Image (cartoon, rainbow, N blue to C red):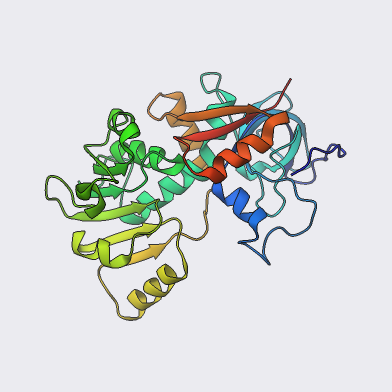
Length: 311
């Protein structure tokens, strides 16, 4: 990681140029640096990392409608190109949404990957956000992380019963965001993942690592699903086995996020209405982006790690 001067990018067709105000670091970002996604990413070096940003539109390319210079926005940058740890970045207009005054740049920048992943996982379980969903029971592991904290809140908005695991220091926070049952994963009771009220789980949003399918299987309802957002090779093999054997209980690896503009607008709207909160672990200036990077690698953040661009 080095700070360098590069030309300000320009907006091409269906793109907008943003002057960035905030960005958030996700584990995916440093996994690209570590080489976990080779040969897909990075496409070329040098590579400016980070995709989740908020800022102000300074220019629009041909074909862009509904966005103009001066608009405050939240955007997810193209994962192939990155660009978020910079003063300026180019975003696709299809993944750029207006940010209302009630939502800060840091709060908005926390959304795309983390809240988008939580939303997609919950929908895979069967959660609905229009009031028509069934009263499902869900387990959320590592509930005090970036994805987990959004997952707890979104699950409650979908009227699900939420059991959550996290470290002891974050139990009150997770409870305050709506979790019905919270367990310390370091205790014998928490390590079993069993619901204190004896419920079987219709779905699991699995944000932790080091838990095998055999641990989840007896805890699931007849058609229960485990949505694994950090799957390893063993999890992928288990998924394939479940598909070919038509198993009702399934482990489903969530490999790629299919976030769209409507989903991002939905999430920003929830922030505006104070139905969803971005929990911020720490803030760093762009000049200290390396410290934010290392904080994410260390893996003990409660919520989102924010990099703020100096005005």
